[in-house]
Length: 96
Ligand SMILES: [Zn+2]
Ligand SMILES: [Zn+2]
Image (tube, rainbow, N blue to C red):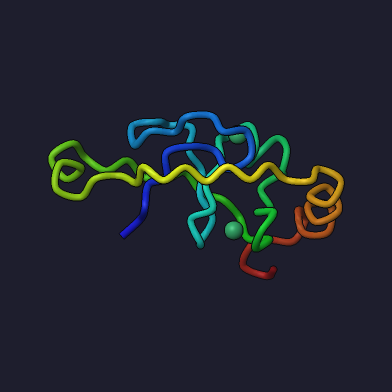
């Protein structure tokens, strides 16, 4: 089950369960669309995998399976992430 983390790990923007801007990698590193796509160019700074839109858990399910309230806020070193993104962004995710 996904944690559904409450914020962008890089810019700390709130990303509640109902947000349509939340992007996750396969490890559920969680970023807003601006960070995931514009800054990191669809290369996760931690695992180099791609991002997909986080699904929204329906209200009746969130009552029994609530989203995480643990904020992870670890801004990335943009020089390092740029090197990593340049290395992987043109390689399709299934070949990374
Ligand atoms: Zn962000
Ligand atoms: Zn990742």
